[in-house]
Image (tube, rainbow over all chains, first blue to last red; front, top):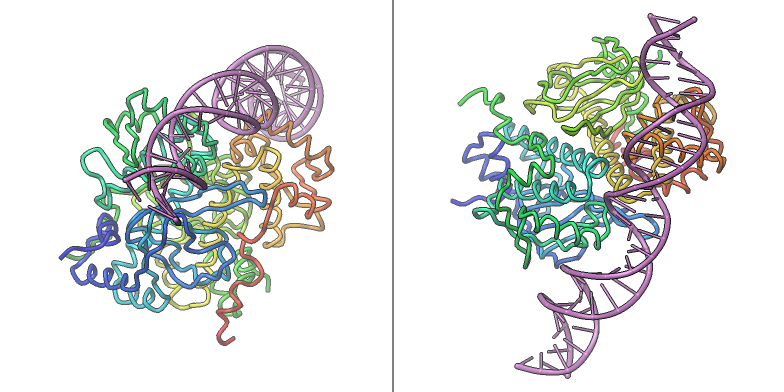
Length: 246
Length: 246
DNA sequence: CGATCTTTTGAGTGGGGTCAAGAGAAGTGG
DNA sequence: CCACTTCTCTTGACCCCACTCAAAAGATCG
């Protein structure tokens, strides 16, 4: 039996039983497709579902009245948006599709049912939330302190490692559907400067990026250039110390 | 009976019974003092407690190997750090005191006991977590898109409104213990530029800042200058729609 | 009442922005 | 399948916001 990306990801943290896995997969029953560049949900909307990204890339973004736009997070397959959003009355940001997207809408009851019946999944979902928060803090550091060169390198490192988690990296390459404009919105730079900086990274031999495919010949080297430390992703079975039985 | 800042804050979201309030206050039994500029917990440490800020200001921060430092969040009285951190093996950031600090260390069992016995508190704590995440996203937007002038104005607006929530604003003034260096680390600017920008804000009549006191004569005007929208703080009794009975 | 931290000012610089336009790539419709 | 539009990427020239370095003036605190 083959499981979805959410199971893949949570399994990195917690030891999940076959029963746990099946329950997680059952959660993703209600799936639908979204066209690229369409919004999944908009600032001001009332949140009704937790969205699970099954396939494709999406982003959280916020805009200022004059049109400036900041991508504040990237969603990859296996990512859950906003566990427990129901308690808020309205969204404070939008979520947009980058590629064609396959998402599962999870209603409140299904979510509650799952966590009640599967304590280890609940732990794993907590881990997921905490890592999401840690990523947001790292982005704050990224925007506040890193140079353009470091900043873009850091973004690429992070996405690459997160894709590894859900088995979407072959050898040293992965799909990379973000445009330079998207990278600009995510890093707080202008598209022109992103273009020039990507060329620098290419010239340094740190990345190959063409035709929506990213290749990182030497991940360690790119990480060094980005001042990247993976600790904030909390990989490496953080959940081990919670494995009381079995 | 007078309650602590946590009760004040959560009451902004949920209708709390006297019993709820008393339980929250009982949570803060184990208090201790921290000297200004001391670290409460450091990156790499194992998390053992949830920290409740009872009095004083603190900050989360991250540093790069070469010493660059980014404050990624400010903690005010009533703030809880990292509900549920226990599931992680180590901290990915540090928490430092800005002023003399009074914190309560809450152990895992106390926290679990509280949420089991008080479902409405659990909801309110979820709200708290979601608002914390929303603030982190807003900071990402702040660093990525706003100019120095807007950025500092935004920070001041946010802190002012969050202080209002816990009743720490008298008329149009509040304590403001952050140094210009702290503001620089929080906004990704240099102290020199923060100094000049604060002078601009003063010249525009938007703020009075001297002797660790901040006065905002016209909050609406400062908010306009900051492109500040309060929606991400989710004030205004978001929890109302959850008041089934009462 | 020194020692140290914090704020302020000045002068010069540079990383990244702006504006503009052309070259590719990729959808779209007839 | 090709002409057309529309993104996306690239390059060049110029500029400015915010940084750097340096030093002095206030605060604050043992």
